[in-house]
Image (cartoon, rainbow, N blue to C red; front, side, top):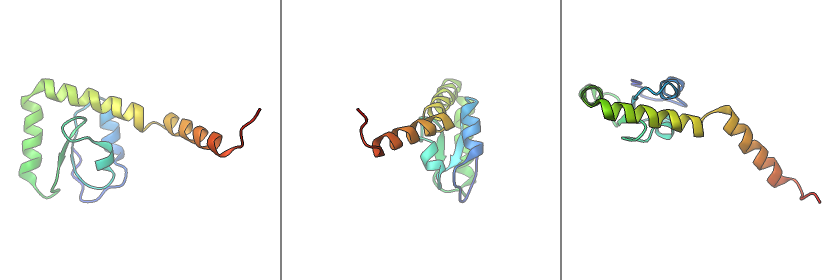
Length: 103
């Protein structure tokens, strides 16, 4: 669980997702880019809503298949979107697009 009132890139969120753990997090800042609500984690709109956080955690504890599915989807999301190798490939594509064509 990541209960933030403001967040850039949530490293703890990415680490949990990488380890295939289901995530419950505040719907703030960079976490919104990391977690697809109901798909790769559960987002709570109001970081001060303790009942909503508790309900989200309880939902995952009561529904093991959902927790497993969210954990697996979160892992795949980190693998495809947030690893440094992906960014390196994007830089290569950018530089290739900026360089004149070679014959």
